[in-house]
Each structure stands twice: as C-alpha cells, then as structure tokens.
Image 1 (tube, one colour):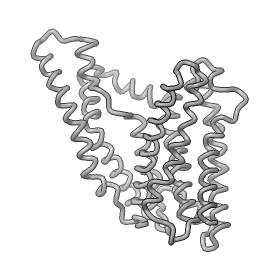
Image 2 (cartoon, one colour; image 1 turned 30 degrees about the vertical axis):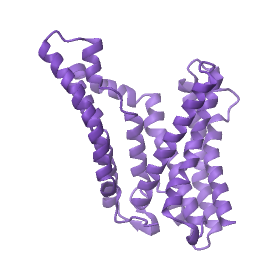
Image 3 (cartoon, one colour; image 1 turned 60 degrees about the vertical axis):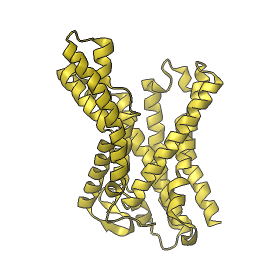
Image 4 (cartoon, one colour; image 1 turned 180 degrees about the vertical axis):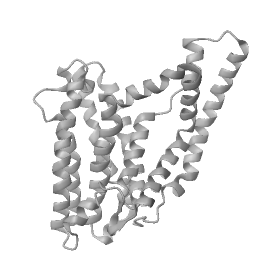
Length: 313
C-alpha cells in the first residue's frame, strides 16, 4: 500500500505540472506562434507558478501526514528550495556552493568543444556584438522560460518532489538506488509526451514524424532525468545544483556542427588559402573535442557529483 501511494502521489505531481500548462480555454495553436507566443508563455508561467506554490505547501504536508517521524518543517526543507540545506537537517552553505560549482565544471567538460567554438566565434566573428546577442537571448521572454523558469520548476517537480515522495513513502526494504535513479525519471520523460499534441494540432507534421519526435524527446528527457536524479542523491539533495545543470543543458542543447566553421564556409568564405586551411583544421579539432568532452564527462562524473552529504541510498 505504501508503494502504491508513492506511485500515485508521484503521478499527481507529474500530471499537475502538465495540467497547469493546458488549463486554459484557449489553445496554444490559437496564437500565431503557438507555444512560443509571448502571451502563451506568460499565461503558462502564471499557471505553473500557481500550482508550484500549491504543491510546495501540499506535498510536504502529505508526506508529513503519512510519515509520523517526519515533521512538516523537515519535509518542506527537504525539497531543497533553501540553498545551504542538506537532507537530514544538515546546513553547509560552503559545500553547497562548491557542489554547484562542481556540477558546472562537469558540464564544462561535456561541452568543451561547443564552448571553445563559441569563444572563437565571439572573438573572430561577432566581436563586440556577441555579448549583446547572448544577453538578448537569455533575458528575453523565451530565455526566461527556457533558462530560468523551466529548469527551476521542472527540477522542483520532477526531481525533488518525486524523489522526496519515494524516499519518504517507500519502506526501507523496498528502496534502492537503482529504483530512484531509473523509475522516477519516467514521469519526467512521459510528461514531455504532451508536445505531440501540440505538433498534431499545428497540422504541419505527419503522424510518423510526430511519433518519432515524441519517442526521441521522451527517451532524452528520461535519460536527463536519470542524470539529475543521480546528482540530487549524490549531492545530498542539492536542488540548485540540478537547476543550474538543467539551465546549462537547455542553453547548450545537443552539440551541433562548428558554428565558426559554418560561418567561414557558408556565410563568408575567406579568400586567403591559409585561413581556409585553419578553418578546415578547426573543424577536425572540433570533432575531436566533442569526443574528448564525452570522455572527460565519463572520467570526472563520479568525482564531480560526489558530496560529503551523499545520501548513500
């Protein structure tokens, strides 16, 4: 019965987020730009803010009511909203910030190729306008959604609330690291299947394309949820480390071909033969850096996700 309650409460947490997005009399397709229309974004942010406030109060209360030895205060603090707090009543702001920095370093290893490519593009192509382009993207309504609001709310719901539900409601004999790492991210992955509905309503893509797109997105988000779950548990419940990692991944996305190489081969081909050779050389270096980034990520994974407050589930 306890496991059943954990599952259904997790299903509610997952479903409430998606329901908040669609709880309106007007559909996203009624607007010219669909889900990217500023009016749609503002409306959805408002509704998700409301359900976030409700669940931040309600979920700790439910867990407190189900687990006698768990106080409401502890259940709320376990969500990880307050920086510096680790599970089991530990306060350590120095380690907390250090763990966040280690998460950022891990992402820097993974994206070493795209980061260096962006730096070179900034120096040799955009020069003074690059930082303005970055600012315009990050601090726009779309940047607010993609790099601030979505990472915060999704990690709170699909990492913190779900893991705390299982940690509190499942008996110790049925709780293991593998279950927490692989089962709860399925809620996060399946929650993204709603994008298929939006694509279908737009009427631009056919069923096979929508189905393939949905399968790939569900698989990717489930895998990413597994990663942030691992970070959350290994860092002793450091929610903000997961949020920062999520924001970085949203900004960087999947690695693409070299932006610098594309500029000098498609947009503005250099006349100097030596410059063309350097551009071709950089393309090869970039591909090597992509592979090295994966290797760096793998080799540093355990070291940069470990914390002295590791939950040790």
